[in-house]
Amino acid sequence: MIHPSGLDGMSLPIIKHWDIMDTHSNLLVSNATIGPISGNPPLMAGAQPGSEYIFTWLRQISENSIIFGVRQPGTQQSPVLYSLDLEKGQLEKIIDLPVETLSILWSLDGEGTLVRGEDALLLYIAFRNGDLFDLRPILGTGADDFTWLPPAPRQ
Image 1 (cartoon, rainbow, N blue to C red):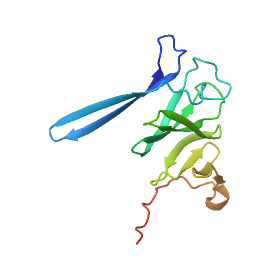
Image 2: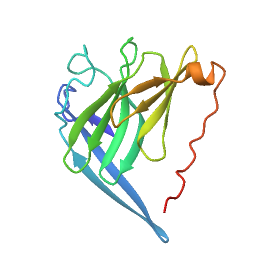
Image 3: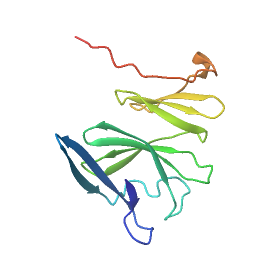
């Protein structure tokens, strides 16, 4: 959960990280507060302090790292992908997504994502180097049902 750290809505955002662990017949809940986040405010280019954001496409890629998207409702701003180091509270911008982005399908290994959008938009983003690949010339404009297969075991 990400929200402003002050009642005025103008302060830097903080993140509440919740873990819910099954302990037989009970649930054990622990939380941590991270922030205020000072990595890249405002979170989107051209946004004013106190702007409203929608946080979406959340994925935990390791014990101490999550990635997520940020959109600004009611604007034609490009959504942005960020990574957050939960241990250090450091926010890092990964890439600006096309305005037409509707959904994201994270790879199982956390190395990249499939981006789907309006007008048959279909891209693959490799996080390691930030490369963006347009898959429409390979898969065509009718491809629309995707499932990541787990990596093959290696010896």
